[in-house]
Length: 193
Image (cartoon, rainbow, N blue to C red):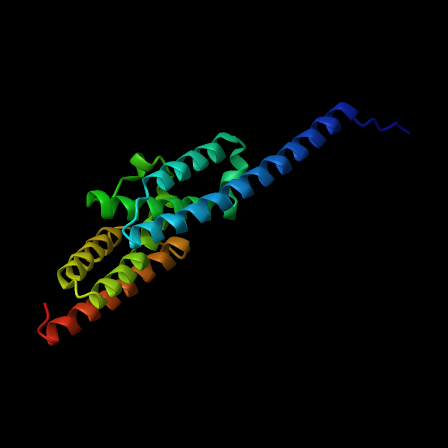
């Protein structure tokens, strides 16, 4: 009978790999939590008309640190994907309010799918803003937001989203558009806009 030999060095290397992966994963989870927290702070600051540039810069730095970890397997983890989507949503919201335009995926240096997921989430935030503006009597801005969400939906309708997270979020954009269209219709029926 042949003896069976186990390569102990190979197993030691595998052990180091697993330990490094676990360590990198813990660091990434902590940093992505910071991205999530900062994204909420940015959206709240924008909604209150407060300065948010420092928060945006800090969030970009935090995401850059996460991306430098370098274990590409971690980039497919759910916590990473959600953090990048929240990053996209918050930074796009900030730029829309500050510069009046939606930054591109290349400008944000994010994966196209993550960008699309984040931009789809943006429509919900825009509808909330429109409702708050209607309450404050800023009706022309409500119409402007409706036009943006309509344009966003039109651009997204050019894609063939299969049954996926993107499809679900695309459908949510459609419902967000309907909500804001209903709001604008109500304002028009009252003769306000």
